[in-house]
Amino acid sequence: MRITAVRARMVTVPAEEILPDASGRPVNERPIVTLRIRTDQGLEGIGIAFVHGGLTRALVGMVEELAELTIGADATRIEDVRAMLRAHAANLESCGMFAVALSAIDCALWDIKGKSAGLPLWKLLGGVRLRVPAYASGQLHRGLANADIARVAGQVRARGFRHVKFHLGLDGAASLEREVERAWLVRQSVGKDVKLGCDVNERWSVGQAIAIGRRLDEIGLFWLEDPTRADDYAGLARITGALSTPIMAGENNGGLAPFRLMLEERSVDILMIDVMNVGGISAWMKVAAMAEAFNVQVVSHIMPEFQAQLIAAVPNGLMAEHKDWTFPLFDGIPGIEEGDFVLSERAGHGLSFSRPFEHLT
Image (cartoon, rainbow, N blue to C red):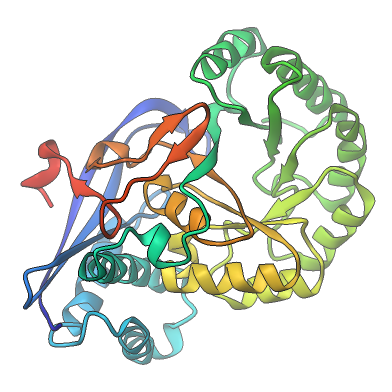
């Protein structure tokens, strides 16, 4: 099955929830790179890619250049295509932008492979389960005023989520008392029956993470995510060893090697994998297999319309992040029932571009 045509476009998706980005600026819309890959057998695969902040025009160019190289290749020989693209990138193979661009192509090829086999990806890749626990993410962000916590927590609970994530690493000078006070306020607002995770976005030093984390141990968090720099493997290991709360990191890891180092250092209790940063579905599955060998569970970061299927495919898949940033782009998003993503039997990703974006992609 040969690739006959590719098309990369940039579209702008409105942000349904106006949330701050990593720099604290409100995000009203998100530029997304879309990709279509067509074959001589009439099958089409789709993929997307984006970067936080700027550089989207550069990413469009990279996706387009790499995708055009695949024309004439066998769409079902995904590892062969990946090897060719890595050789083209040469010494930029480990570049984060290359991994993100590669992921769009890789995801589109897996979409084609699933459609060719007549199987949904979750079944094609392993088929462990049809339902995947979802954790609500983004609503209880660090920019939210304390006075609004109870109201927003009530909205999240009303949607049936059993797992919820909030943010610490509050703006301003780091304060143990402020961080702990906020955590207790969130716990009281969501209730004792909700499994509560916390994301710090690498804002603490190792010492701060241990000092604050010991106080947070009393709250019974499900995990503490990215307490310090993701590439400080030894520092993360110190935090993991000092706290009873499970430590999770990995969303910012590019490619396979950082995950190997993280596992060897015993830096985390749970691995988080971002399908774009790691370089696509092929690489995602390799990381999940590495983690299984170390008896470590995996969680996905963003893009649940793709990654819920990956969590469902592997035996050590724990749960998928419910983040609706890219939902408006698609028809066929997995449904939510009682706090779980419920996957379908539609072949491939089971997604198509929605009517408002069909002519733009």
